[in-house]
Image (tube, rainbow, N blue to C red):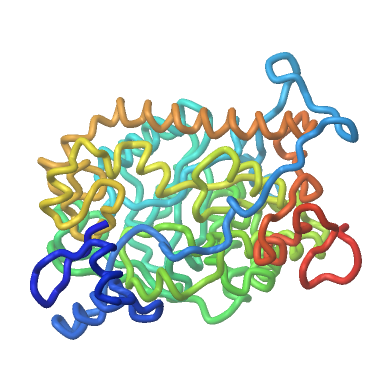
Length: 456
């Protein structure tokens, strides 16, 4: 390990630091010192993309109890394990019937290139799931390539029009996002191209900051009115989702259901974003693991668990994560950052160019700058042209298939004939924090921290 020192522009390895008796502060470590120096130098708060990078209790802190004697596993390639899910059948005439319980979260044209949006639609459609527009409206290539397209209805109302609402397959009313609950979106001027400006009715090249709440929103009763308006516009055909950033999840889910939501989307703080203040990303919201049981509790108390569907997002990476979210009570999950990586984001092929940007493959998070060498988080035509939507869509489809197969592997190992049959009883936690948040017992015990008596 070699560490560069700001004072003399030289390097000290770990042994040299030990010899000199140098000890790094846990509170003022090198990233903290660098952040203070940057703030002092520029007078500007830090903006970046991605999601929370601090260590948080997450799905890795849970384990499945596979079947052996007291439970019988299913044979891997001879016994069926279903993966289909129906979303929005509470009120909508035409709920979504998806082949897998993994969907693509909302990511806007503007934050992403047109090629990336097309690729997301292609990949999702190939495996029979949905994608979501994000802020800024619906692009023709996205609608054409998406078998199931969810239209996000955000506080900004950029690009919103009744015709696109009717052309969508579902509508997602966004009240919050996991990376920035209580805050609005950001799109810096370098990403507001002529086409983006036209779609959003904005001046080209000027920074844009979206509102943190809907302009006609003063409380939960207004959400009821808004949902009814959207149902009237779409002739009660489309499922209406309500998306919240994970904070006061129990209350937010109850209010969303009372307002008439067909589907509730809960986005934990590990969820990504194209651009927001880092202080938001790292210090606002609660972990995905803590949010799911609160949402499920709210739905159960209303007698509507599995009737109003729950989609969970924020840090989903593998089939194990999907299976754990479903076991905790979700009906489906949504992926964003992982989907972009599958398309080709942070590809080592562009290592030299990432280095020129002051980053590296696997670390690049300056999505707001619009200089993404992979052609995904950019509006620069020359960069965007690097992304082949057909090949990128195929990579995403491959990744979604792997997620689904991994989820099935775990479900079969637990003796389940459908992935939605997974349940909290199939899980244990390996840390006290995860046990308390997920409300499952600590491994080897029947103890759920914060609850009296044995595990239920």
